[in-house]
Structures are given as C-alpha cells and as structure tokens.
Length: 364
Picture 1 (cartoon, rainbow, N blue to C red):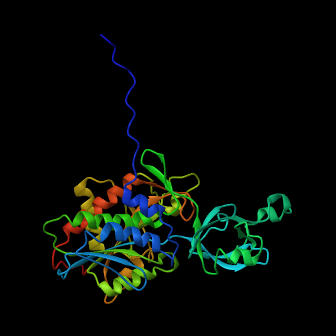
Picture 2 (spheres, rainbow, N blue to C red):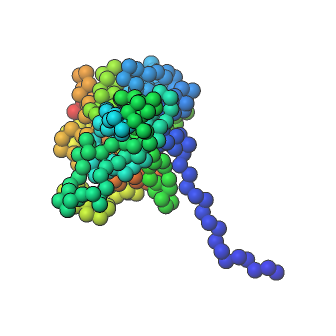
Picture 3 (tube, rainbow, N blue to C red):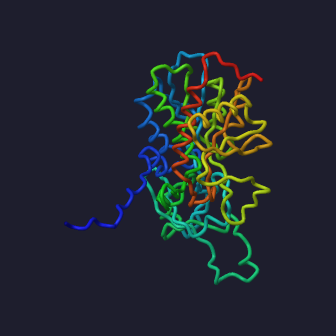
C-alpha cells in the first residue's frame, strides 16, 4: 500500500473580485474619470432599476425608485494624478498636481499620460543626487523642479503626442502581497466605489426592499467632494453613507496617541463624531454585531475629509454615516488594503440598508 503524502495541499491563491480589479486598473484622475465610469457602466446598468449619469460625471444606480425613504451610498472614483501644464523647447513636460500629493513621491516614476490618441508612456525626472550640493540633497523638490520625459527631441515633437491639460497617473496596478492583503495605485477610493456598487448589486436581489437605494460613484472628491455635493443635492436622500478609506495606524512610527488605533485587517471602520448622525452610527454598529463582523471605531471631531461632509449638509440636512476601509500609505502609488475587509464592508452596508424601515426618522 502506497504511503499517503505528508505534503499538504497549497491553498488556492486569493483572487481579487473582477469588478474591483477592473476599477483598480482603470486610469481615472480627478476630473478625468472616464475609465472608471465605463467599469461602473458595465457592471451596474443591467442590475439597477434606473441608471444614469450627470454633468459632473457621477454614475447613479437606483433600486426601488418609488420609495420615499432613501439611502444613498457614495464611493468616489477619482484618484490623484498629474496634468501637463507646459512643454519646454527641448520637449520636457512640466505638470500640475491633481489632488493632494506628498512631493517626495512623484520623481523617478513611470507615468501613463492619457491623450486623445491613447496612452503615452513617460518618466518623471529631476536633477540626480550626484549633481546636488549637500544642502540641496536634504530638500524635497518643488513641483516646478520636476518634469516628465517622453523621449521627445523638441517641443514640437512632444506636442505631436501630448497636449496641454492631458492628465497622467502612475504606472502601477493591483497585486496580492500575501493572503488577501493587496497593493494598488488607487484603493483610495476604488475600494469605496466597489463597496457602494457591489452592495447595490446584492440588494437588487432582495425581493422586498423597504427603501430606495441610490448607489453613486462620485467624481472629484480629491479636489473638494464636488461630485457628492451635487449628487446629494439632487437625490435628497434620507440617509447618506460615504464609503472611503482611512489610515491604518499599525505601521512603524504611527503614534496611536495622535492618530488612534486602526489595524489593517481589524474589520470595517465606523466613524463617530459631529459629521455622523448618531442614529445611523448606532444602526451601523448593530448591523455589524448582528452579522458577527469585527469592526473598529474612529473618532472625528470635525467634518470628515470624505464625501460625508457634503452629504450631511445637502438641502435640509441628511442623516450621514461613514464606513472606511483601513489603508496603509495613503496617496502613494503603493496603497495597501486587506480585501477581506472590503468584503466585510459590502456585507455591513447591505445589512444596514435592510435594517432601515420605510418612513423611519433619523431626527434626534
């Protein structure tokens, strides 16, 4: 009789959901969200009772449109980027910043410039360290001290391939680091957009939905929560839940006394503070506990830096909530997220929405 092998079978590698992967691979800097919009169109048009776009580029998927009580989900689809602002005589491209960048990040990166004729590959450059004085080496370069090199021979040559105003993103994609922990260029906030839209996809299968659901892929969050503002004004929801990322403070040198304690794989983060309706907060916690999902709390003493800040103040006021995915290295090309937590956030949002009753008041 042959001996049984003592070698255990290897686990099947974790797979990123196709919808999320396509969102993460989309190039969609703020104000130029075309590719991410197309992904939402592909996955949401056929499941929503109504699906539409607006003049700010938001995508809105609606379920059960006749209900007077409504829950809005908001996850933004824009990301940080660069924008070509000037081309010098030698064909080097200078750029503006789209969104809030740490200026230690941009130099020495491959970038993808989005032009009317397709993608142009470039690399960001600055003066090499060998050509700097000791004092210069200690300074972070200013934006005008960096450029993009596309291998052009002259200004005329460069302008045959790119135009002033063309946007660009870093040339990075999604990869698994270990288990369900992944790295990508734009988890902020394609993770939130996916959660909002995937929750709506699952709620579309519910036979009896008491409320209207408006799942919104919002634009231009990175430059002032602009898409969410107009969407909330137009939809006038009863409840508005923003889904975004927050800082995972379990990395070296994160002072929990300053930033709180949030762990990468510790579950969805439920925000609490003046931006958050207390009844919504309690219902989110109750939904997590009903599902047995681990959750974390985050205290925000002011309006949050998310779509929730403008949702709350729309029209006569909206009962706002905020669910966040813990993320390391925010606003870099290497943002790290545990995708298992992304799935928990989808489940939490679905359960919360099912708990909202027709005609329920969130006045306190």
